Image (cartoon, rainbow, N blue to C red; front, side, top):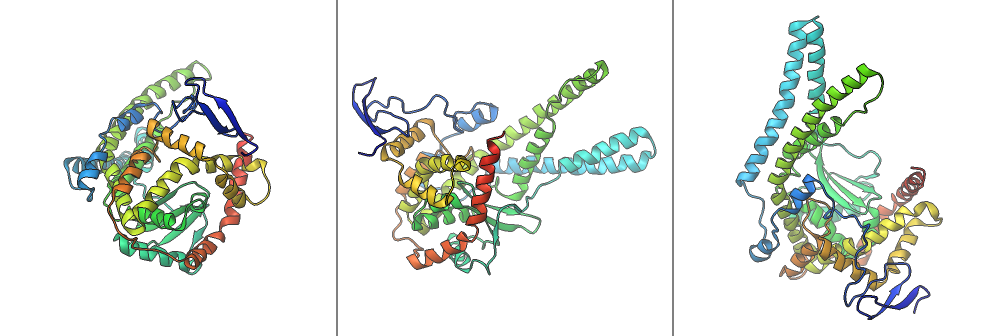
Length: 419
């Protein structure tokens, strides 16, 4: 028994509980104290968008029975493109109208004010195609030939275009996207997540993310995705203004808040419509990416990634948040902390994930359903298996960014102490 192990009687069913004093004490028999009242997860947050997402149809039975295929040109997809076109055309019309007012009415103060306002709003509502994160270290093909060689193999198996840029950051996550007018394919690897995965699980992670490049998810495609981003930008820009100052300033602020409030309501409605139109497709796209990853890396590897997102990822988050209070090697400390996570805590988090329908974010299906889907895939041997030496070469290339990321994580943790 470890020094932190304790034994107590369950106050609800009187069963004997053996637990770790560093973690939540709970009862596996009756699930007493399984969840904490202060726990806040994507599935329990309130708000109209969260309620809309949580009411969406559960596709789990469908994908188990008939597979996922690829997103089709159903009415919802067509409607999403139509609405996205309206958003982009609105920005263009504001630009044209603003320029016309400036030219046609110059030097009228009315024309100048409304013309500048039109051009300014057009800039705010412009299509956003994203850009590279300048703070995350980028690895080139010359710097990381082993990593890019692995990614090229995964891309061929997944039927996806090759990755153009690999970024490495300190997030307990990974992502893939297309940015810029040229459509640069970017893969971002969160080093903390990478470090807690087994070699075959790392291949599954890469296969899942790269699968998104070729699965036709409208939300991830730049045309619809940029429209959603634009609406969120407008919604944020129309934030409520503080009412302060003299009587005239207060009256002006009230009028502005009424107008911006109407804009926020309209934009929120458009966001909800686009979210609802793309929600089902986004869910299917996640299952499709999981299916590709199961074929490339094995169903067991995909399920392993999902299980670690439920169990070990929260421990990694806690470790990184407290990084400001510790010295020494951040990554070695992370490995030791995760290795010491008791099985009772992992099982608690698994049960809690099923109870609260925990998911990576609102566009993803509940993670425990993705685990069940992955293990249901009847694939044989993995399409890609790397030797220990090959994976060590990949790790050595990622380690080149580890020192910088550790400093950034520590600096952020220290800064949070003063917020």
